[in-house]
Image (cartoon, rainbow, N blue to C red; front, side, top):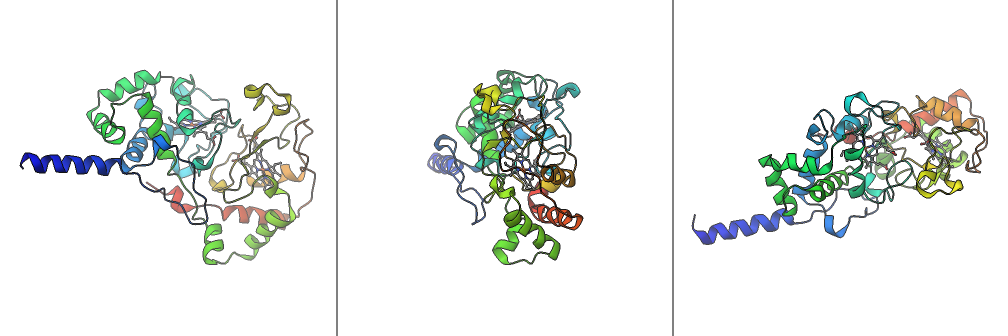
Length: 322
Ligand code: HEC
Ligand code: HEC
């Protein structure tokens, strides 16, 4: 190959690999926010995905992001509280990463402002990776596959910036919008009688959509849903110091809720049936409990219908992705 052709191909490959791509999203979803300096590209997503599944990021190379955020369970772990390096237990339940691109705050108390920032947390947490991110990036520098991919993705060698950016880039592709419920609203797939009854309860008869509203079944607010009178975990007050934020947690999405048990910030409720009993009781008296939460009654048939509606939010193509 002569030098002119070589330069031409090099230029082409460079431009191609930096070309931003559109996020895959269903038409009934809004555009997620993507920071200007971290637009999605094929190589960035590829690098982020490789990092997400690689235990090299933890001190003893045993734990990856996917240990806790397992795609099969909609990026959760089926544990009451997350378990990291050396079997150490984290003090909270692992949240799903379903549609995480749309979150406007991260962590269960909303302490983190961006996905890029959030990606730093597992490194310095003693119970998660327990590895300084500079040591992690030195490890990657010794791996030619990572160096290549990092150059193609960001034009730089592996660094904390590259690691956190790539992880955020990959996570923004975790879009779930192809459940039976989505097929029902887009293509008129018929719900069973029980699912339809549950849908009516959820949207029209109960108060669920006061908080679990919109395309992602959350209004992204932070509130108290009356789980306890005294919370061992103080919630958002840790960040703000404001007593109105005591025991206040983020309203989670209900998408893929069938597979993300156990539930709540501390994994204390095992089944959807028990979640519904919790709401039926009106919740415990806590000074910050949302005022809409009052006792109500459902018979067994109605409880089952509500559960079967919640099951229509399971997106098997999302859970089975490679
Ligand atoms: C040991 C288990 C564990 C590991 C490993 C882990 N996480 Fe998490 N993750 C959690 C827990 C628990 C939370 C909730 C933390 C909190 O609110 O204090 C969380 C929260 C998050 C959130 C915030 C989600 C939201 O809705 O606010 C994101 C994003 C995230 N993790 C991504 C990652 C990435 C990327 C990695 C790898 C670099 C990773 N996690 C590694 C357990 C884990
Ligand atoms: C006032 C706001 C509000 C209302 C109304 C509400 N929820 Fe919630 N819901 C929350 C919050 C906040 C959490 C998370 C609490 C925590 O992490 O401890 C939550 C958690 C859940 C969870 C567990 C999610 C998970 O991933 O752990 C389910 C399931 C759920 N709600 C279903 C419902 C249903 C069904 C209704 C209607 C009967 C309802 N919610 C009404 C605020 C609300």
